Length: 139
Image: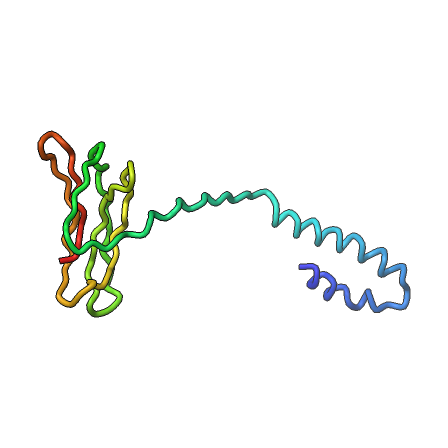
């Protein structure tokens, strides 16, 4: 914007009298700077930090069980996208017991660790009065 004002004033700035330049340039620059400042103030945008990613998912090749303290929360609804290429299988999102809490692992496409493999999702059962988390695994 300042360049437009200076370009419009080019004939005046090139006049032989320096007093014209000074008299006209100062108010024009002040107006241009005021306009530029008014466009850049007044709006504050705060960005919420992303939550830390869950720990890396372990790849299990056989089921294993863990006694857990509480049932998992309700699962999230996920949208299954298009596979990134041949040989990829969808691994649906699930709650995984991590230490002493549930951690959500989002659904994703993955290649089986061996030819012909398929994903068996985790499940949660009650056996003998205990809550059991049976980990998902590749079969």
